[in-house]
Length: 130
Image 1 (tube, rainbow, N blue to C red):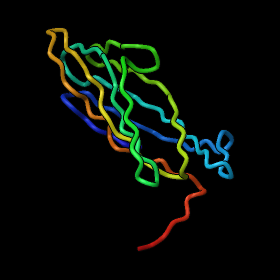
Image 2: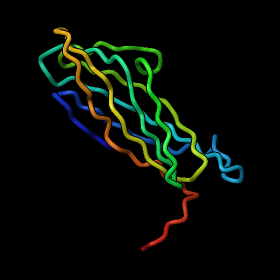
Image 3: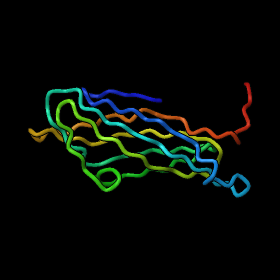
Image 4: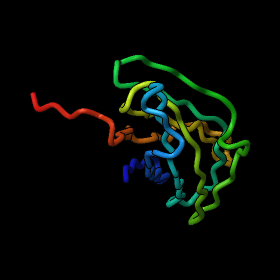
């Protein structure tokens, strides 16, 4: 589990390797990641868009951005939360992701809520001690 907090918005990420959906012999590795976004603040916010930086085990970077998450732009009232699960495929048995959500307050103020960097690891990764 990985956590980050920005302006009373806490983002918790739990990644899970999906062995049944992966095909290591074809360099196809798949992870699900569950995210919970909690509003610990006193103001209502809405998640407007997302930005992801996905880095595979070879250092290749893919950037993804777009409106909302899983087709929604959730409103988080004080004390409420929103959870969802999504997935990511890689051609390497490991990598990591990080990013942010663009949030807007009822007053119209925009800010970026950090998504913590989280590790994507599979059982197929050869571990080497340096």
